[in-house]
Image (cartoon, rainbow, N blue to C red; front, side, top):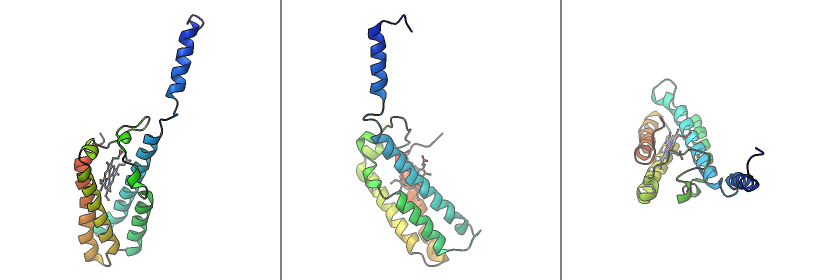
Length: 152
Ligand code: HEC
């Protein structure tokens, strides 16, 4: 690269420095954290679906453990949806713009999830578990339909 003028080289070096994650990162961290929370929710579903299908008997401990993991992974929820997280720097997000244009709707979808979560957590037998599961599972769908882009 000897033929490049010195100033251009300096400019190129500066561009690389500027692209380094000095301020970048905060949005990526929030996106990564909320996706991990969602993965834990997927894990909770994975633990519960066999009981819904009748492949496994209802087991309150398995349900409680799965919910506990989701709860722990989602503990920081409120801090992950700043307007600056609509797009990641290095991390891709499937969050839709509607989260920010319809904040009340997004909050309501979160509240429906909280209600379903409490219901499955409180289930004591197969019948109450199945009824609560519909509410819980429905809350995932309800939010995703409005607020998440499908992954191709
Ligand atoms: C209040 C809204 C809301 C609720 C409720 C919700 N999700 Fe999500 N979910 C999202 C959004 C938004 C994304 C995309 C996040 C991103 O990419 O930044 C997502 C992404 C996901 C993903 C993909 C994560 C990844 O690796 O990229 C899974 C799996 C998932 N959700 C499962 C669930 C399950 C299971 C439930 C219910 C038990 C649920 N979600 C409830 C909003 C919600």
